[in-house]
Image (cartoon, rainbow, N blue to C red; front, side):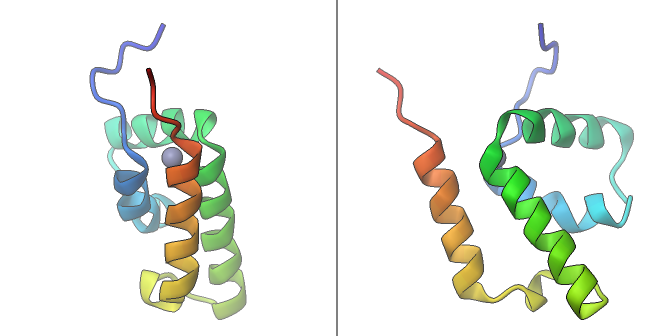
Length: 85
Ligand SMILES: [Zn+2]
């Protein structure tokens, strides 16, 4: 069972992705990041997109990700998180 008390939200993951790719997260954050990633196809896609962007543009930065693309990905996350009940 997961013993992590706080689950990362997709929004938090998006905010941490740059640091993750720069290897700048502390071990706890990194563990939470990867735990979320394992269960979230939307964020896996997002991470792939970021890696691709870096490869193409040669640098990190959310600024290099077009706002429209970012919105589209966030939409994917929303659809992925089905409401319970
Ligand atoms: Zn997610």
